[in-house]
Length: 442
Ligand code: ASP
Ligand code: MG
Image (cartoon, rainbow, N blue to C red):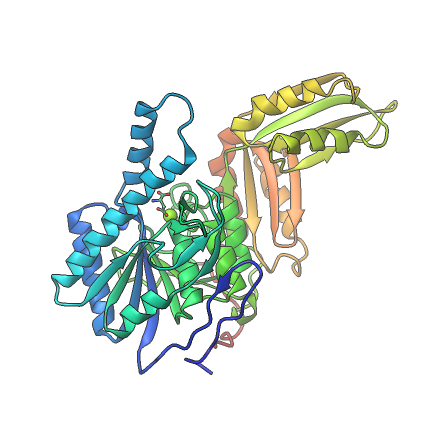
């Protein structure tokens, strides 16, 4: 029953069960990013927006990021004062101050508009994390204090991006982690909605800076959003999307500067069907490493990728050529800043793996098409190849999954390729994208 839901304990995130007293109000979590609270004027605008929401009859829990570039500025400051790598613990002590500034100021701004408000740090709000500094995962939330304050008629402001370990150490959730605070809190208090307010209107079919006719999506599935977030679309933190999917949180991404509708992130089953490709993403942070003339024998790949994994180097796409005269070539991609280390690792295993040469290549980009309908639409892959080759561009590597296909191409041709794909898949604004009947909305 609504209002009497006890939160199911999961092995990964344990939220304390509770009974929410609900009258006629909707319970909404609103999250505002750094640019939305970048200065006093913007902070006032956000305060007005929250007060409006509360007066409409919503109970509001608000999560805020640090103002503007505060987090970056604090990082710069630490670099000036510290030779070598600073203590991770002290970095977390430092960076969490940014969110503490914005949540207290926002509470004051709301109070001066005649509403009751109270701000809490992550630990006061009961957000527990694993004992890792810099990118801790949330392990559980005890939202009693937040709920009690709501009951007393407060708008509750919670500092994003932070939590506390069982040993009372302060931790941070990784860059962009305030999104995760908001979604996890929404799950823990069984909020009706979680609204992520940002400086763009919603999730776009691709980067509007490259494709001016990019369209704002009305809706996107959790899985599609997760792919886009992991592929470098920085609008939402991937962990926040994972959490929303796991706990089925109604997520909306919208602008804090306009009243436009935004994009709903939801379960695929309740979405309108009929879209093969929902969005196009790109990632310039790729380099290709090729190991040439590797002697064919069992276990060679295991040695190479085992050695890379030991050094925490993430490998993305892997391609092996056919074997000629007992020799094969391998190529794989890594992040740009891992290239030197990866080359080092491979040179060091030369006594275990026989090969002729190892080379690296930069100036590449990974272009990906994402859509949950791809599996059931034959020809989606062929279209991607046709479009790219039609521009006279060669495809260096390809990878596919059920809902995504990526090609590695030279980065100088990126804009042309994304534009052409956007048109080919009928994504340009003004095209009819959503076919099929109205969704079976909950
Ligand atoms: N202030 C933190 C950052 O810049 C967290 C966030 O904004 O979500 O990464
Ligand atoms: Mg963000």
